Image (cartoon, rainbow, N blue to C red):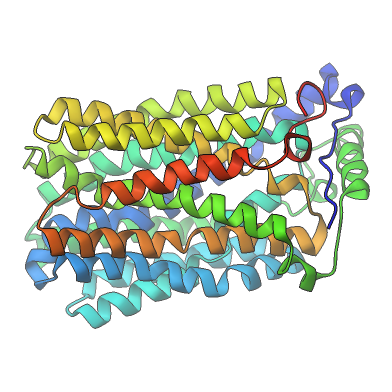
Length: 441
């Protein structure tokens, strides 16, 4: 299939009226969606903090934990594309609300795990429940923002991942430190309870707050609706909307999936094992581990915004992804070399986090510009689903290597290699295909 990148309409996007309207939309949507994604990411990675006590209480080996942490992504993979297609058909408001309430219930049920089999089952069901949430929001944002604004919009939305680390680390560490034994429950059980209830409540908020499309937004004036809808309509008319079956055989979709696979390998390798890496470098107190784990994510927030703005300003998409990915690989490598010094290890892990987190929103500027309609829903979901298989393979591989070698750093070369390979793959894409026509390509 012959894809072309969509060039922006400078008349509409540069006007003061357009900027004011887009700011209004951003303030209406991004805080809510970002907070919901914080909850999603917390419920996905809190298993890393629960492991600090859960594995010992239940007798789970590193391999059992790695399989349980990763099996989430099998359910996620199987239901990702159907979920996103349903969202496109029934509307984001109802479907995102459904996703949030079901994943909250499953996450809450994790507090009653007693065996490895229950652990695997609930993690698998959590993947099914959450399938379609992230790609659904990426798709949903394309209904409101044209291509030339998506670099910074994706970055602003995906800051939620970094904020989840800033908030989730200290919160999870505080729960583990203060709630052990309350009502006869272990601290890790309280962790799942207290972080599983908010998504259920926010699902109800979504039902009353979110609008499916620009035309449905009562908080926009008719003039604002017309101003916002025009570039979206023009862009959609120029995009390809191939039959759904062709999306599954499109070479660009599979190439992008390979790149995203490499990025996710680094992201979840870091997210699932960061608490353990900090503990192994000499920090034993759960609350201190939580506080220290927030530092890399806090540093990633401004980095993500700056990289997103630079990519939009320069119209450059490839290097905005490749350089952060390489920085992530460098940081992971330095963390291995400084493993016996907690502060040097933390600095290296901060570099890794800043790099990996900045590469992610840069990546999502690529597929959103290529497809429209149901093909976009399926294509974005397929890329996310295939890429997130790394969330299964990464923790399983790292856990197996740690058990086999009895070395806490044994999995790092695998994660480093994945990030370097991702950078190479993105630079192999012709610049004319993915860079904006304003200054690059």
